Structure formats: structure tokens, C-alpha cells
Length: 198
Image 1 (tube, rainbow, N blue to C red):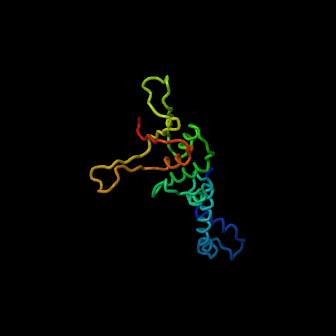
Image 2 (image 1 turned 120 degrees about the horizontal axis):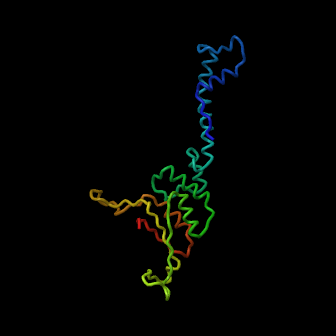
Image 3 (image 1 turned 90 degrees about the horizontal axis):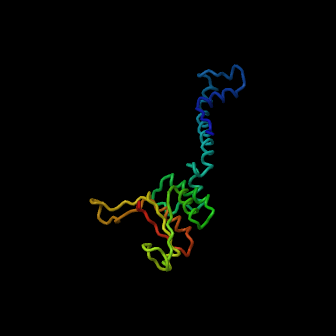
């Protein structure tokens, strides 16, 4: 439901309708009550608009004015979001942290990344064993605890000809996914990130 939007003239009319009837309570544009109502009406209009925005601000997925309060409650913003994160990314991180129930399953990590705004897949590995099919990747015991997040929409900007000397060979557009999943991964596991399309 959308909150009603009232103009300054609506508030002036409402204020004038609250006045008593009589000669000294003139509703004419040149009368004192009309002019005083015109002075008060913008304040009421601004307060009404702020009250309407409070409905949207009460929810972290649509908040604007209360976003800093939501972030302070959750220990955000953190360095994961970069130097100047977008409002949408900040909201997504707040929602992801508020709705996070914890978990260690593949479905949990996929759902958590989706809340952050990333569509990912997860590849699980296993150590080599006798009897495995020929051609499967060979790996030692550490592969039993290794998993890979495949995030093709993750932005990587490589160094290009003409860039200034001293710039890094590549910059990652958003490290929120990496930071949040690394913080939530089981401690005994090794997490790898794959940003290629394949």
C-alpha cells in the first residue's frame, strides 16, 4: 500500500477548515488566517511526507533515511563493500545479515548469495580414491574439505593499455560476496572463488 501524498494546498485547506466560523476567521486569500495557514502548511506537508517515508524506512530492503541505523545495528558498513558502495548493495548486505539463520549446506550458501544479489553455483571436490572414473581431477586429502563458488557475474576489471603506472593488474568490483561467504564458511574448509563463465 502506498502512503498518500498531500500537497501544501491540502494542508492549508485542512488548517482553514479547523478554524471556527465567524467574521474574524476569513478564508479569503488576503485574510490573516489564510496567510498564517499558508505559512504553517509547508511544515505540515514536510512532516507528512517524512512520516510516509518512515513506512518504507521501517523495512531494510526499502530503507533510505534509516539505512545508517540499520547498518550500525549490524556492524556495517565494513571494508567488504569497498570505498563507495551503492545504496542497493548496502541494503542487500543489511537484509542478508538480518535474515541469515546460519548453515553449512550448499543450499544455504546459494540462498545467502542470492540475498546479496549474486547467482552462484557451488562445486564440491573429493580426494582421489581407488576405483574413481578415469579423467576425474586428481587431488589429495585436502580436497575433501575444499569447495568452489562459481560467480560469473562478479566484476573483474583488468589493467588496460593506457592506465596509469602503478595501478593493480586487476580490480574486483565487489568483494562483498567473497567477504561474507569467507566469514560464514566452516572453519575446516578451503574456499575457492571462480569468476569465469565456464
